[in-house]
Length: 361
Image 1 (cartoon, rainbow, N blue to C red):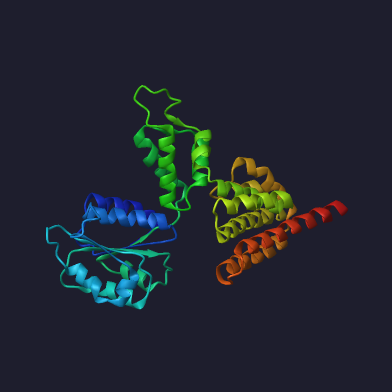
Image 2: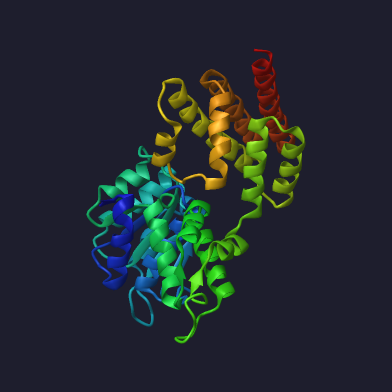
């Protein structure tokens, strides 16, 4: 079975309520590692609530299966000494030929009733493992991609609603825009927010039961991410000093240089869309209404200003510069913070050049 991202939550919930013994292999894959881990754990606990039970729960790594491909089939067919269905967790799995062969053997086995839960990582559509499990009647390939606006809304309600908290409009917008990179981290941030507010009693005032914008910023405010926003807008405005201070803060807070470059890439891509709209006579606001996550309202004036200032051709060149910087961070072994600082300084220099050219007109 091929379980698309939009069907995944319902599929997992249904399985948790009533585990289906016909399902042998559940493959969780996608670009959200936290969501992969969460759904894999939910599926495993539906079969064996205590995953520390050595008689009913086994954990294998992909490398262990590569060393001994028959191990997976042996675990699938083994019986628990104390009764009950067993679960075998494979993490991380990878997509090597021996892993695929081991899973194929399990799917074709004539006996065995364990549930194999595989955490596959970000497998491409051409992945042999993903295609194998998706095409098997006894398999389910479950897509786990970054949360959409709606799934984040549902997550917010599922974490804060049961403890008696409601979220006001501004706080909800902030949470949706500042969560979503990883399901596990998003859930953790919301749980911290619930602890911060405290669980209100039945006689609590409406204010005590409401999560406000100030509450959300105080707890969920990712200081590294906020600092990165400051660095991005400073660079594209040509503010050298503010850029340097913001990058100091970003790296001090522990954000990786490659992640920082991706933030600049997202901004350059958005500006390219906005600048293209402006150059073609369309409204930049039309683009902003359609994108997600939406920029915070305090950033909208700067986005309009930068979209008018930067030509699409220059932005296209910056996209190439930033893609090269990301690759260098991952492959060259050079000091990656220095790579980021050099690339972003070139952006700021470009902004200054544009400003000087406009001033001479």
